[in-house]
Image 1 (cartoon, one colour):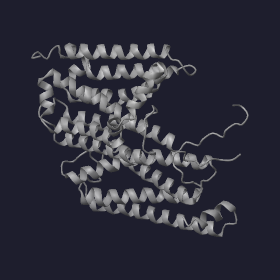
Image 2 (tube, helix red, strand yellow):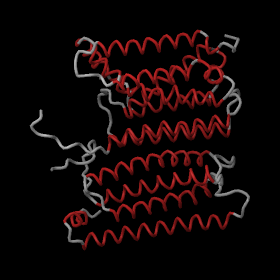
Image 3 (cartoon, chains in turn brown, yellow):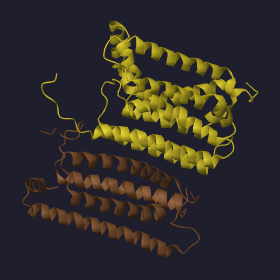
Image 4 (cartoon, chains in turn yellow, blue):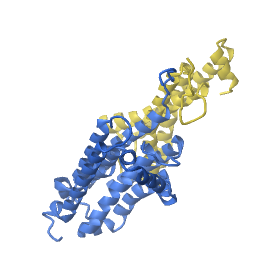
Length: 173
Length: 256
């Protein structure tokens, strides 16, 4: 059975490993945004909807990331499903992408949004330093793990004897 | 009208109810009068009727009445009339239905009209987004809100704009009605995220700085705008991405 290109309205083929990485990154960003909203805002009530110390730039950054977070998880999952259906998913590349996405969002949230824009703090009425260090430390660990996973996937693709993997490596993704 | 007690049942409410009734009747007559195609999907008719009901519920009756003094009711009404209702109306694909029900020459005129430059300009996702979310910014950050509170006609116009702009934006982003020169999915995705972001920023701004005369429970209303808006926007995102990443089914040879 001949498979047509997966993304019907987009002529770019998805058979490259790069698609797996980007789909993972989108899901990672979306999951991080979702966990931030659900766990820290709604369940723990550590974060505040708005703590009255933020400026317009912070509000805009928050709005864009909130909107993009939802879109990222929806588009990333649909992309994941399309790649699976076309038997073009590289699992290791995808997992690496997810870790990078989660780490990148958390690092941005912990540094730019919480500190630079002062959007809201991780928790109120506590000494923040420890919380900030753990928050950003976890973000860096996730980023490193994601980068490591992606590099290992690239290496094994280059070495790999399977046809699909060799094509992916040639594409230089 | 000076007395607020019957605002929901005033002449704008009667007018909106009449328009809704005509919209439903016209649609159902058109479904019966179609010239082409096989059966019209029942769920399209259900979407059209449901969308009309949501728009009506958001703009008239007890909810709109409560919205005069309670920002939560006001925000719920706006999400129904400006987002959820228009989404259902778009799913009803009225243009497709009209093209199938109208006499051929009239239908051809309608397609020509839809391809005209002004219509194309207005149905661009960017234009529709500015009309829709920009309209909300104008409403809450200028004296327009106070004006609408005092004059029923202005209030009615604001509601009409809310519904039409919501319809236009939803149709430009995820509509399946014929729309010449609809931009690609990536373009539409960027506009969607930007429009959602602008909506979220406005909601948080209203939470922090509620306009004068917006009524009680301003903070809760802003959160309804933020989170209930998210729910409708999530459905729009799913519709956009489902089509964007759709895997075409293998064509079966020999059955056509």
